[in-house]
Image 1 (cartoon, rainbow, N blue to C red):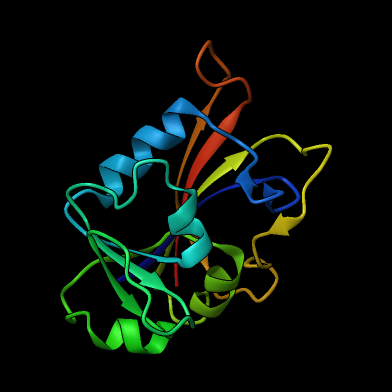
Image 2: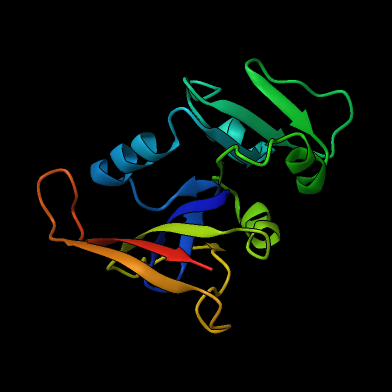
Length: 162
């Protein structure tokens, strides 16, 4: 199963100047709970943005077109297609970014795990692709939350399946 996991604003914004826009404690906990024990697949820039490198207790796959590059604790492939060919049919693969990888994976994914932050940031330069207008995704679960001391914006956990 291929799942895309992402936190997005109401306008689908996901980043600004190479960093995530939102850092909600609940979203980070959900990300860890869902991805631990599974495979996470990401682009090189996303990997380089991880402060501690490879995510523990997960198979880490990094995509880059740079020849001969390696990163500790990861497998490196030049394309999404090649990376997925090295995954088994029963393996759960989470696509964790960035925007170019999300765009490539959207047509291949079976599931979307979205944290929708009920806010529109003043500045954003990176956006998640339009996933609603094609009508291919069915919302199967929605969990709404109010802001609190660790989560400054209202947000919803949304699960879509193809």
